[in-house]
Length: 79
Image 1 (cartoon, rainbow, N blue to C red):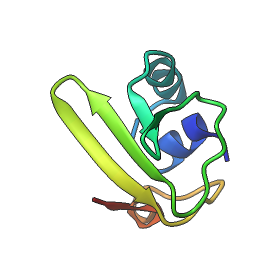
Image 2: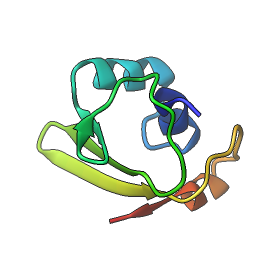
Image 3: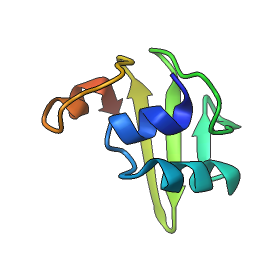
């Protein structure tokens, strides 16, 4: 699954265009490398999101096309 779509489905970022902009600005790292929105994520990848002075680091546990809001937290684990 594309990185920008995963960020939206997992509710880490609310909207896909915002996820795209964050990737273009270099604020999203996957496995310690700056990632483009088109990067395919897979279970085991570590995603770091840098917004302002807040850093969020998560490990991808599952990649699903659709998820409801309550179950979206099962797609990743905070590090």
